[in-house]
Amino acid sequence: MQGLLEILASLDSIKEPVAIATLVRVKGSSYRKPGARMVFRTGGDQTGVISAGCLETDVKARVESVLRNGEPHLAAFDLGSDLDLIWGTGMGCQGKADVLLEAVSPGPAAPWMTRCTQLLKRRRTGALATVFGARGEVDSVKVGDRFILDGQGPGLLPPPPGAFAEILGIALRQALAQGATSSPALPCGTGEVDVLIEPILPPYALWLFGAGEHARPLARLAKELGWFLGIVDHRPALATSARFPEADRIVLGHPPSSLHGLPFDGRSAALVVSHVYEKDRQAVAALLQQPLGYLGLQGNRTRCTRILKEIQEAGVALTEAQRQIMHFPAGLDLGAESPEVIALSMLAEVQAALSGHAGGSLRDRHGAIHLGARPPMG
Image (cartoon, rainbow, N blue to C red):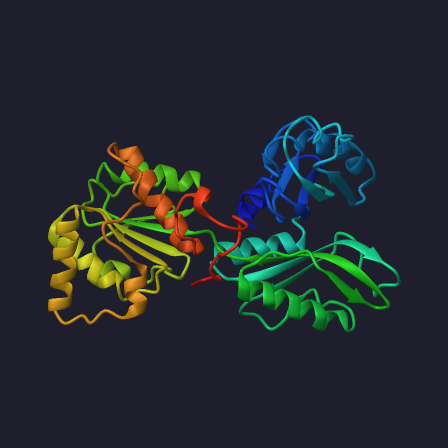
């Protein structure tokens, strides 16, 4: 689901039909996982990626047929076959991939696109089902159909037919609870359908408490990662859109009053980087009371320890949940010295913490590298 908002935004202003490619099933190893999407335009422009670059050329060759007849098409690729002209050229990929190709015409967005956009922008959770295969006698379900579960809503939209509604509802709620994408074959009527099941999770949000010069590389890198970016600072000369054009929101003020109404949740991180001692202490004390997935304080260990000690001496008894989100000093051990590498160090730790990973070297990880993510919204 990562990058879906960018994909949907790219379809808002199309003047001619385009094709959207969705990676719906993978067996074995691949650069991207099911749910990756890409938009192909007739002029050759593309948005998004579905592989490391070796699959796009072959997918693009099939786009013209889909645009011509308007019918969804499931393309199968053998990633490890020596007979395959794309994957069999020494790329080293192993496994198989199925890609659903669909035509999208100019005009009002499809209902599923509108609903997904609304959920993502409102930072609400849900789950999306995309039908990409059918066998036997199925009940009024076809390839390309989509059903959405709003995590705070009454049920699925549009309502699936017959007994399939309950079966699909269970699969969608399970995906949302686990935060995991899957491609199951589900019974429908006297047949079965292949469905891509994806949790709809809001983008990670990064709130920078401090708008000094050292915050600017943090802002740039966070936006490159596709995160929501918020800036909070009490200095009007620093907290400006001219200095932070990447920011989705800029708040002038300081905790605790400046926290009122900010949309914190388990997919939100806060980095305290003002380097004004009293302001940093106040910010940390206030942010410890918020439902964050990560709280980091920039600075040396002695300074960080002193700030935390003073907060506790003021009567704040830290819970285990609060201790779990704290990262003082913030950042992974990358040997960082320049502002840019320091930013990389801190945002790498944020990424690891919010996704439920340890942040160590993949060389030392046993088993699949894409497993172990924490459930959504912390």
